[in-house]
Image (cartoon, rainbow, N blue to C red):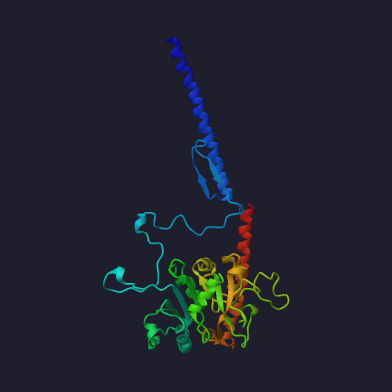
Length: 366
């Protein structure tokens, strides 16, 4: 009896030691996982019975600094049950009567926007005719004239948003949030002064998908003055993604303006690329100058995912309509002040991007 009692007493310290050792081991492993996941961005942890508490840690091959996540832990919906939360919306117009689930027998897959003044209505009407019922039509009005567009049948089904003397990038930042346009596979953000005689929207998207383009534009007819060679239509190809520019203009043949580049005149964005580009648009830089040189940050590799569709091409009429909305100061024409603002905004955008890059690099190296 004494021997048995002694045996029991001796086992308890041994079990206590084992328990403490196991707990200490688990604590050390937990600390290791926490520090490793912070440093390397672990993607998964698999747990089985090979070793108590943990058996496998998978670390991705790319151990570079993680990109900044734009998803916030605090969405404002924390007090609600998840089943009632609707994080995205849409631009589909609904009835005032009937059953909600019968409102939309057909949902458009694509969105096209034009920033317009009433004086260019006939060019816009011709452009809209190139887009089938599979496109939602959205007009941004910079001259305040909206109801007059109802002379066109399609206008009565279109969406109209009006703010006097505002640009398309001002409108896009405020009304094309990625969570608003999420239902659309592609978003066209176009100027009003485009000749689309040789353009077909359905055929255009077929080529975009065939060549894997995330950001694109139609080729520009080369008979008119062009700023960039990249946007010039090539007559012997469906799509081009790279070009040769003037000597000294391209330090890297895979960087803008020789590749990874389209202009802000008639860009087309995939849903995913627009989610990135929207965040890059600055609230106060309304003309968007410089944005085209930064689009490559939103797709990888940019020189393969950004391109110009030659087989579906347009002509830019270069009507200085919005430029005339400026003010005449010190004897200068209204368009001169607008152009000066454009150039100044481009300078500011470059400076902000450079500062943002430096700040990101300092955080990474720190």
